[in-house]
Image 1 (tube, one colour):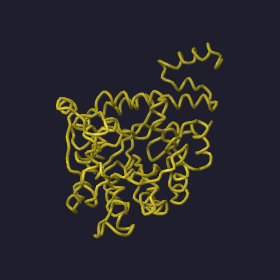
Image 2 (cartoon, rainbow, N blue to C red):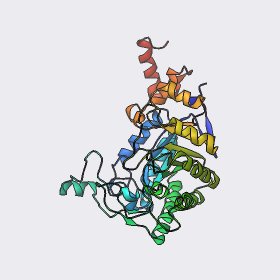
Image 3 (tube, rainbow, N blue to C red):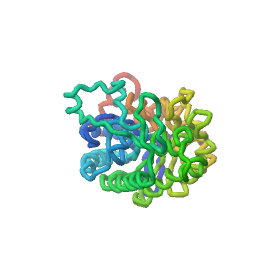
Image 4 (tube, rainbow, N blue to C red):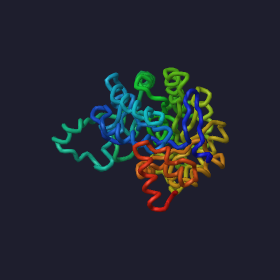
Amino acid sequence: MSKLFSPVTYRGLTLKNRVIVAPMCQYSCRHGFANDWHLVHLGRFALGGFSLVIAEATAVSPEGRISYADLGLWEDGQIAPLKRVTEFLRAHGAAAGLQLAHAGRKASAPLPWRGGFTETEAEKEALGFESWTPVAPSAERHSSSYAMPEALDEAGMTRIRDAWAAAARRADAAGFDMIELHSAHGYLLNQFLSPIANKRTDKYGGSLENRMRFPLSVAEAVRAAWPAAKPAFARISVTDWIESGMTADDNVLYAKALKAIGYDLIHCSSGGFDGASVPVGPLYQAPLAEAIRNRADVPTAAVGLITKAQEAEQILERGQADLIALARQALDDPNWPVHAMRELGAENSYGQWPQQAGYAVRAKDKALGVTR
């Protein structure tokens, strides 16, 4: 059996293979509520053989949304639509995950395919358009195209921490098997961590110890609110790719602290701040996952332009990571795992398709001479 298709267990959750879907924002909600788009978008990955499907960055409070069309879990009414998703995923062999997030100063942004707030009045009504003033560690905007945020005081930080814990409890009620703490990509927790965004002079700014204080307090609150039998992951930006920003050395310490709190795996991404020089290319973040795995002694997920089955297998064989996370490649090929199984020579790969499809795909391949 290939490493990629061997099972792995985190707390009470066993994943059938090491290929997972990373969170991908869909910008398709009205007032934070999931809908049929999310059921179909996420459900197809379960049918394609992924072991864990992590739903998009889900705001713990209304002002924590990246855009007005983001998914949210700040009120009980948002539980039921998500429960439809978790039940479907599990019924078709995939575990259900949810990334909990707060965008901080990158909130109240336009939908990416619009490039600006171009909605007509009729569209605003139909889409549930909203705008608001973001909050952040410091009153400094992400870039000129983003709104100026208000600096959080301690009361505001407490409200956000409590909202994160409440969202974790709602995620459990919605039936999610794991949650992921989003502290990457220049969003709120990453803003506190990085000196690029954190200009505070109180106990939450300055030294790395101070800058980690609020993110770790949120991590503790979430882990305490989340069932002990269920795993919690954390997504981090291992480096800001900016000379004066967070480094891998800094994030080794952050990952160790998360592990001590009870986080089971670190999902290793990078970047998120204006001005970063990111060396984008195939497998470009795999060495970052390796650095955290080896130096912090914690399981990791590798993500970022992993497209080929053999490349994913080699990342695991080399000990660079424990899980392979796909995002855009999963969008391009929702059946990537079942295709990869055949490519890597797994026996009975057709049996991993849904029964409604496996026999037909096998017959097609047999007719083409691909298999016997």
